[in-house]
Image (cartoon, rainbow, N blue to C red; front, side, top):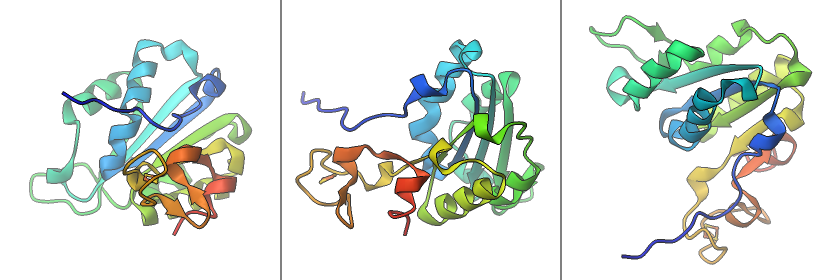
Length: 180
Ligand code: FES
């Protein structure tokens, strides 16, 4: 058996303590933030409030359905799909459409985590900026770019940045130069 990793740096959860946290994940982007949500399930007092927004292409694409149900018992969870079907009775729209109505009491005291496909990340960040969230409070993960994880394959290279070596998590001030 061969095990390697983990590589890079995770989300700076220590700096999230006593803040409002919004986790915004699209599709498989939910996987890398699942452990943070589960951390707050175990230690809800670590932060002031958690909002979770998750979006998938269609009902059949929904991941971690059982866990999402459990999260709903503890936190505000908004689940949406881009396209519904005859069985779906929940939200139908792009995840970005729900950000203007999100209850954000104190933007300066709010951390936003964004993970998902490139277009979703780009427009999600723009919506949160419109809501007054400071750039440095928006954490964007470029996990999807990771391949070898050790700076050798160049798969993760965007301009001069090796995503795997520097993180894959960047604040918006840095990530806006990396978002395509
Ligand atoms: S993932 Fe291979 S160089 Fe970064």
